[in-house]
Each structure stands twice: as structure tokens, then as C-alpha cells.
Length: 112
Length: 110
Image (cartoon, rainbow over all chains, first blue to last red; front, side):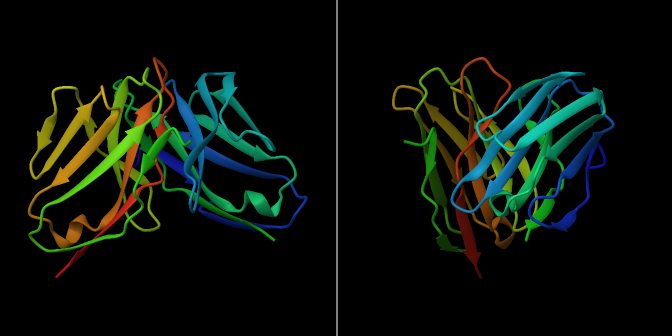
């Protein structure tokens, strides 16, 4: 779906390094979300944003921060990556107003 | 207890079979309900919303039982292309946050 893109698609990083993942949308939607997906846990909300500079924590926010300085970009930062943050990260936008999300293609992050 | 619970499966069914998945949710204030489909190593995609009156989209039928707090998805005449993980999703109250179940894996066999 061209309306939402994530970068990078894959990343391998070392423990203790900071990492930033980018989510970019072209649809001007107000709501944006970061989820992580792990076996046995499903998708869990990390942080979300309901407008420029308006963000809030989800259920697994420890070790993560976010920023949204423009409507189209929502950045997720792992301040000091740990092996427990090895996961697939999905960004989503609230497209339809009926609260159905559209997801980006995901970022596979490996922390070694 | 998880907010949204699903049988992980796998459900192995032959082509043409009818298969049903159930999902239970714990928050009685949940307001919106969805089924998403996720193919292996891909992002989740919205399959259908679930309405109180039940709704149908081709071979797919979704039902909501608020009293018992469960949601169902029925797939008729299964196709090989239906093989995927099906995610049950709810919104806890009047929010824009979605809570996902861990998914049910469906494998349709030729």
C-alpha cells in the first residue's frame, strides 16, 4: 500500500546502540501507531500519536521513545537496543474512521 | 487473562470445507470489532469489521455476541488462498487503539 511506508525494512544492530525506525504516510491521517509482533504475544502497542507532537504510551513502551514533528512522519527510537527488542515492528495509520488500521510492511529488527 | 483470546490452531482443512474461528474478549466496554488476515511474513490486512447484527462478505461471515463476549468468523468453501493467520481485534471502549489476539493459523490443503 503506497500510503504508508516503513524504513528500513531490515536492520541488524548491536546491543546498546540507539536505533530509529521511520514511518511515513502520504494520506494526512491524524492517528499513527507503532506495534511490535512477537511469537506467542501477537501485536502489542508501543506508542501512538493523535497529532503533531501529541503522543502517548501503549502497553510495551519501556525502552522506546517516539516523535512526530510532521503529520506524515512518526519515528520510533530504541534508546539503547537490547536483545529483547528483537522483533518485527509495524507502523499503522487509522485510515477509515471506523478504526480499521492500515499497516506498513514492517521492519525486521535484530539486536545482537 | 489476555484481553483477546484465540485458539492458535493450526486448523488444517481440505479445499471446499467450511471452517469457523472463535475469539473471546474480556472488556465488556469494547466497542469495535474486526477480523484481520496476516500472510506469512507480511503485514496484517483488514478482512472485515464485525457488527452486532452480523455481516457477510462473500464466503466470509462474521458474528458478534456481546452477552457472551465472543466474535466468530466463518469461512465457507475454503480456498488454498485462504491459508493465513486470522487475527481477532477489538477496541477497548471509545478509543482508537486496537487490541489484537495472537491469531489462528489456517492451512487449507489441496
